[in-house]
Amino acid sequence: MLKLQLELHRLAREGRWLEMAGLIDDRLLDAFTVRCERPADVAAALHARYAGLVDRVAVLCHANPHRAHPEAWAEVVAAIRGDGG
Image (cartoon, rainbow, N blue to C red):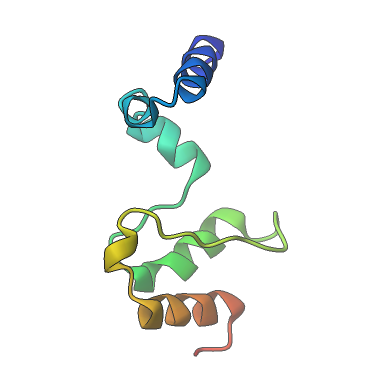
């Protein structure tokens, strides 16, 4: 893991951001994120993973910000809060 961290750090310092993605496999990504096929599944996935462990979360949609749908994410945030939208 240290070797990966050092390589990622080097690439970041060199501004080689796209190359960094090739070093991150699904196992590592899943260690730091919650991924879902549908926005409607996000609240349940977050609850299943973090219930009793955290008191706040940040929801970021960076996969394709040009196709992000604010209305869908508003529903996700409402479901996370438990207010149903």
